[in-house]
Length: 408
Image 1 (cartoon, rainbow, N blue to C red):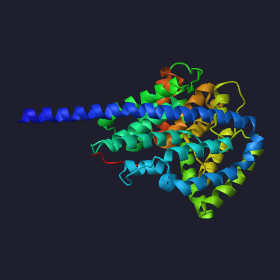
Image 2 (cartoon, rainbow, N blue to C red):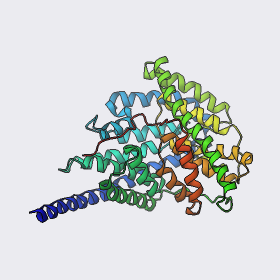
Image 3 (cartoon, rainbow, N blue to C red):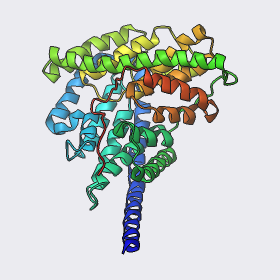
């Protein structure tokens, strides 16, 4: 009897794992295709805006009205964005509407076309969450909802950035906060690698950079990395704290979302034009490119990008935070490199991943995006800077719904 019970439990476990894995593969294909389309159009939009910034940026506030109207008219609770994803993961909400995908994609495209400073990972993760959640609702297993939700989130992140390892651990860590559910690992890995491969085959390019080595991993270099990690942690925590407070203040000053996005939109579009003619608009990939290639980085670039990203998102424009965080971290690293005596591109790489870690209160995702983008040979340095930034972020996070959840 005991042997039969063990065999029955094992059979049930592996049959579910097979179903979840097959479902994750399908999720990865769909999410990879959608993120490829989203990412390629966003790149084209960015290029077009950079060529016509003077004509597009003045209309940011008016486009904001269209975004708010779309969400008010058709979005229902999809305006919560990542908050809704966390609510479903925490069993506080039951459904993520499929309409979230076109709304968040179009809202983000419009935000970037007309110059808002925002990211893209939030869109990809929401796309993945919708697809994963929708598939899970077709399965008869209670735990399918959370497992495939995580798998979808990993597919979104991995498909957009083509960093599947980072996608796996970011999705698991950001939703589960420090816990790893073994049942989610294999489906999540399948979804992330499938989405990454699919988006690559569909022409979405992966960002990589060659950085200057700091030399051997010795004490004299390790303490410099720790010092930078401390600064990155504080700045990342300030970004998360500032974003939360800015959203609260914007909602208090302008309870009407139409007035909020319109008046703040006018102010920031003027700032974007006045401050180097759109240098701080969009994703921040221009600043990232200048950090790792031949380009001019000003000592104040990171401050202005940080502030304008916070205000853009607080106003109600669509997008994510992570790509601007990459830009803020890289430019801050460039500014700090001469002070601590580290190579410029190496310090930029440390900031690139450490700001991400500090602002999202995640550790493994940023660590793996570092090695997937810059190389595995720098793993000891990346480990130190990420864990230092993680610890010294003031316990802040850009994801208000991030908390521990119970797994069924």
